[in-house]
Amino acid sequence: MATRMENMNSGDTTGWGYTLENIGANIIRYGLVIILLWVGALKFTAYEAEGIQGLVANSPLMSWMLGVMSVQGVSMLIGTVEIILGLLIATRPFAPLVSAVGSVGAAITFLITLTFVLTTPGVWQPGYGFPFPSPMPGQFLLKDLLSLGAAIWTAGEALRAAGWRETRTTAV
Image (cartoon, rainbow, N blue to C red; front, side, top):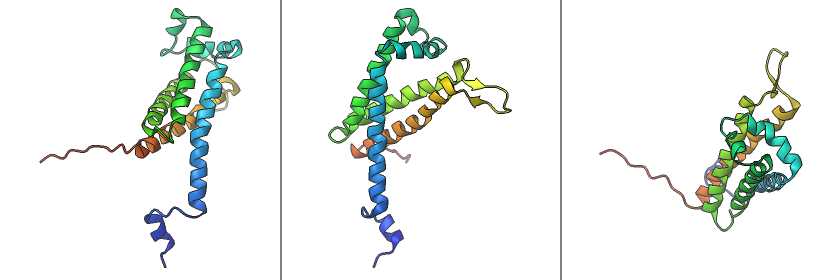
């Protein structure tokens, strides 16, 4: 009779641990898809465009966009990118490499969004001895840290599913 550790090392795919891991993986992947699609669609509303104006205007990475297009145009461009990335990630069952590309794009998007924490006035509340994020936009932006982790994980998992292998060369 195999021990529990032997089953774990042999890649046992039965039991509650495996079941919960699969459920969690699907929630992570398709939760990320839903977030990207939903938030991307919201970027087409005037309300959301107004909401991101201060974030974009104070960003050294994105403020140039406001000189090229309107606030609504910038918001719609960002929304389009988010929707495309969400759709790419959703292709995992039949196109894992495409899904990985979407996940890498989402990770880049979340990294850019997280820079707003450093560039947007009013993100941090002073006076507590340690900087606490303000309710808006600070706490709103910090959720992207988890989304970044989800995007990186889905990228790695999809690359493995696609059979992506790192090629290593050794010196002779």
